[in-house]
Image 1 (spheres, helix red, strand yellow):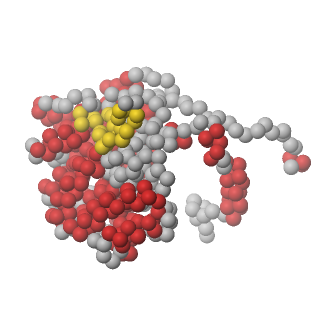
Image 2: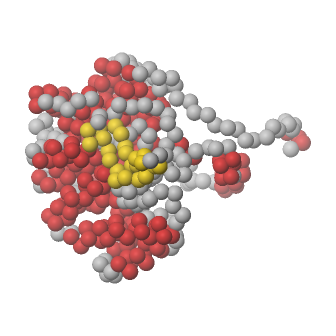
Image 3: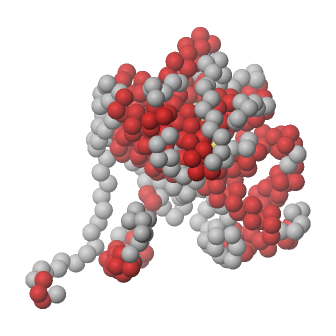
Length: 453
């Protein structure tokens, strides 16, 4: 018997042709009406839809009235992310919690404030009684982002102040979710791994005295063991993925849904749905899959000509997924360099040495050098192109032995902080409901009785 939830009948296939006929719009009309598709112009400049105090992405500057590209810079609450990472790594401290405090409250914490904040996060790092058994273990999904979103929506039912959108209550809800995202993600994966892959089930409890990054590795691994470098690199990854301006898709989704005065759980579930897309949070999976094929097809990883030939095949739709893309290369804003990738790279190199994967790192570095040159030669470019943070993050997760199902949830465990800050900013300013305009282009029709159609 056919599965009605996954089978597509021939009638549905036939009807889908009408959908395409009804919905296709000529690309020329977007130009004619001055519509900026994706809310960006051809140079990647976004349409201004709001103001924010939370973060800033800088990719160009004006010199003598002309906009020129610069090495990308990312600022959290006015602090350069490079300085933040340098600060806590120099002191051999984990940075996720410290930077989360900065994004939520607008200033860097002193030692006493950070200790209190860590205690609050540890207090909330506990799921309701039987939640793992009754919710996470039931009908585990193969996609952890869907599992995470379902768990978040279910937590609404456990909250006695579910729809209260006062700032104190929303802050409490956000801090709970910041604490719980790692547990919901990893436990969801463990449930799927157990029921679908017949693997042993591990549900380890987090420890209050460990950082978020350390707890993720502890509850994920059967032996609960990890090296200091592994934890440090995951911590840096979480900080770099924590926030990226109000204009990225999932953060904009957070503003849009918050503007309706919806509850925190629905807002975060909507943001998760946005982040799940391969054009947003799922890009690093594509990078690792692309490199897996590259390592099979390219015999000499150090041969620039052979690597270049493979990259050209990617652009021509003759390799990997035939989409004509080199994944991890290019960004909507950055054209010269992505600061997150620049920060990441030195730590990636250190971990590759610890894992004995120097040859793989050398291949990534070679592609990083060659890909922008080849793209510029093969494609008509409106702005420069550079490798983005996804280029190396998938490789990092591979070295950390994270399963691919958790790549995007790890992104979410970081970005929940940024979403929380933007949700509270939207509520604090009590803005209008966000409602953009769409221009109808269909012509008027005369109703025809059914017998005459």
